[in-house]
Image: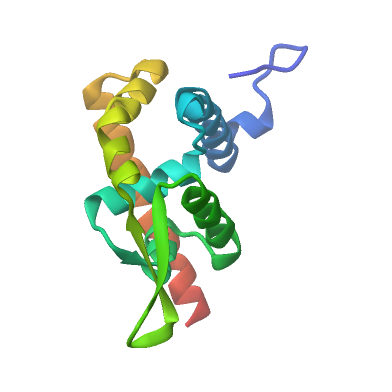
Length: 154
C-alpha cells in the first residue's frame, strides 16, 4: 500500500474499487507475459477456456458467460479465427445465431496452456487456501453487486 509524502495511507488505497482495479490490471499484465509465446491475449485465453469446457458455443452464450458485449467479442473471435483456433458458423435453424467451435489447433492448445492458471497463482504468491478464499470473496462480492444492480433497476 502506498503512502503520501507525510507517511499517511492514501485515501484511494482504502477503496475496494481501486484495489480491484489495480489487481485486475496486474493480472492482465501477468497474463500478457505468460500468454505472449502463443500470441494470445487474456480475453482470448478466457474464450478458449470456455470452449474447452463446452464446445461449440454460440456467440451470445460466450458473451453472457464472459460478460463481454458483442463489440468486444466479435473482433476477439475474428483474431482467434484468423489464428486458426476457432471457426464461426451461422446456425442453420436461425441465421442470426453464430456458433463458435474449436479447431483441432484450438483443442491442442489446451494441453499447451494447462499450466497458465497455476503460473498466475505462483506469480501472485498466494497459497492454495488463500487463492480459494479470495475467489470465494470475489464471487460473493460480484453476486451482491449484481443483485443490488438488478433490484435498483426493477
